[in-house]
Amino acid sequence: MFRKILLPVDGSEPAMRALRVGADVAGRYGAALTVLCVYRHHGPLESSLSMVRPSDPVPPDRALSDFAHEVVQAAAAELDRLGAVNVHTVVKRGHPARTIVAYARDNAIDLIVLGSRGLGDVEGFLLGSVSHKVTSLADCPCLTVK
Amino acid sequence: MFRKILLPVDGSEPAMRALRVGADVAGRYGAALTVLCVYRHHGPLESSLSMVRPSDPVPPDRALSDFAHEVVQAAAAELDRLGAVNVHTVVKRGHPARTIVAYARDNAIDLIVLGSRGLGDVEGFLLGSVSHKVTSLADCPCLTVK
Image: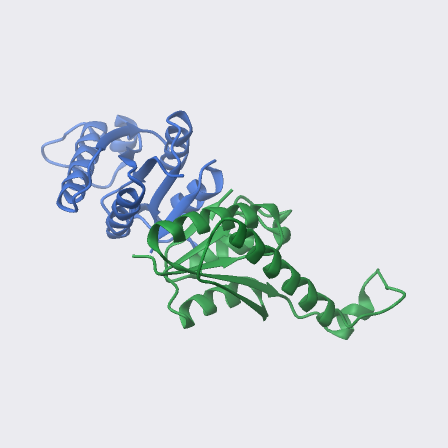
């Protein structure tokens, strides 16, 4: 039933808890795991409007991309520690929920396992907005983890 | 990880699809399955305000209770057909989402598997309201099925 499992991560603790649940389900089903981190485009204009100006400026998009790569690497290391096999990592730029849903559809994902609150959901109403949108819009089953 | 799985049902097709996913997961984990149907209280006052008056009136609460029992029996029959073992059925009266969440908490449920749209969600915004509320409010992981 579940052969390809998608694990969207953002570096938050709920996402890491979801990762552990996803690893367990993948183990039971012999499923492949894809760890996906989506970062939002953050252009120079937005940067110039920001309150915080680093003394040694890195292009914001580059900084976010680097962070996203660190997040998926940390997730992959945790999956390795848990004994998960058949793992690969993907970093994408875009709108988080839409990008996750599109990735799942384009790659015939059977199950998305995600934290019910991530970094973007501190002020989320009820369910965090990203997980709510993904769960609503995805064609496949979604497993949300607190 | 998952030893006690809760399957809320309402007779809708998404709930039956969720039931089949839940049976599969229960099989992989050797988990017990509880089928739960919650019906709303519908008192004589609400009945008297209704547009539809049956010629042979059955107390509305009784009719809803009978329907809920039929729903869980149909679900249990489907689970039996799928080869699920360790199944039991529960009917409760109350607010659907709150009753499902409370049942899960009081019975140490590890996973709730539910349809992402049920009978009450025809006009639901994005995710159906009952599954959205359950997924938001439950302490345990929730698996939503389209």
